[in-house]
Image (cartoon, rainbow, N blue to C red; front, side, top):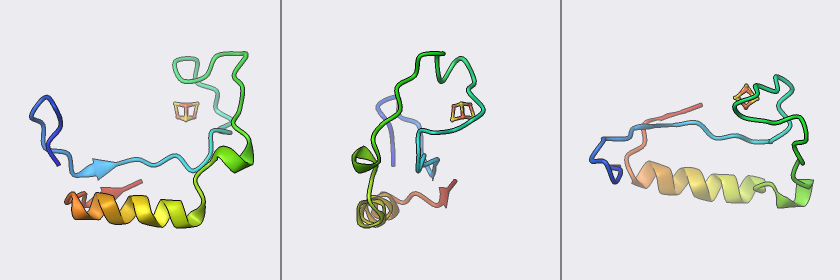
Length: 62
Ligand code: SF4
């Protein structure tokens, strides 16, 4: 995949939840409001996302 800055993208990181307990301040402020479970991607949606990314030649996932 080529992004709008013409960089070749072959790696993505997918967050499965927003409830990370490290609380790095550049990512989460003190008053962060977590998403409801029904707002997170389902397993089927994750499978679809990964298939699309694979079709875009993404080779590595974290
Ligand atoms: S940046 Fe920090 S708080 Fe945000 S997801 Fe990563 S480890 Fe968790």
